[in-house]
Image (cartoon, rainbow, N blue to C red; front, side):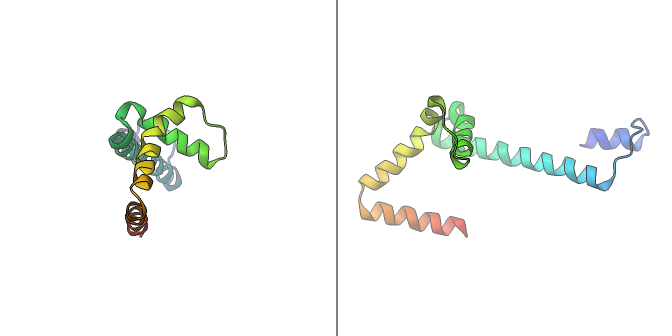
Length: 105
C-alpha cells in the first residue's frame, strides 16, 4: 500500500484514488493478514501443510457444500482432538465448553 501511495503522491499514477478506494485497499490488506494469522494458528493444530485446506473445509461446511476428501483429511486432527476430549468423559467436555465460552467473549 505504501508503494501505491508513493506513486500517487509523486504524480506517477494519474487515476484519482478517493477515500473509498483507499478504505477498500486497507480492508483487503487486513482481510489477508487475518487469513494469514488463521492459517498459522490452524498450522499448530493440523500441521502447516494442512492449514489452508482445514480453513477451506470450514468454509465449505459452513456453506453447506460437499467437502472433498483431502479437505476432510486436513481437518481430521481437530476432529480426533474433540473425540479424545469426549472419550475423556464429562469433565473433558465440560472443560472444553468452558474454554469455548470464555474465548467467545
